[in-house]
Length: 248
Image (cartoon, rainbow, N blue to C red; front, top):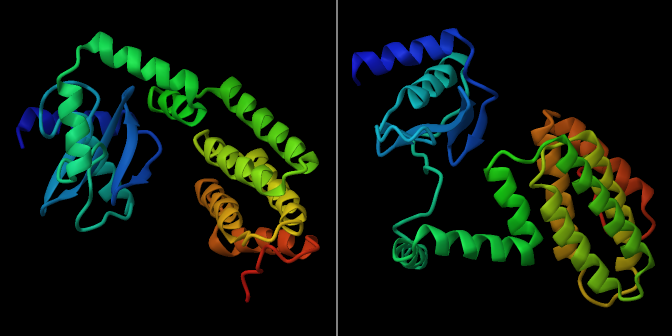
């Protein structure tokens, strides 16, 4: 590692330029001085990925992030997977090859067209670009609340539950908030009522909502016991036993 890179990384750490650490692919992800960087152990060596565009395998942002992670004891796997497509997967490699054959204008047109037709993709796109601000998050909460209200009145219970699961996946793309967690708990209660009306196994939709609840608890920094206690309170409040308490 070049000395200038290490010196620059040390300055970034000293200046508090490394933002909140987030686990990603067995490595660590964070904003570092207004760019997003990833660091992890890849094939036995420190690897990184950064939006700074320096072209360096290990830029100062990645090194600063790695130093912060090690200094704070952030858990890192011995073998991590960098963000982005897996080039060893044939299907992903096929799409990457197709992308390399397109112009920037063609890629932009495809992305915008897909975002207009697919809300999940649209929210993921905005999240990757760092554009999910407080106003966007508030809109996400309103959309999920509306989905819960509609589901509660829907005569097709299975279709309503499917939409709840889809809307929950979209909600999880936004920053985690206590309000989002409470809405997922409301959705679980509504789904319990809906599931009592169908002959199909409700487990698939229940699992999506429960996993969403667990993910939000984790992202909010709740310990496992506190998250389980919240879910148990929901399980105790429903009539048809769709949710299994954690102690069973």
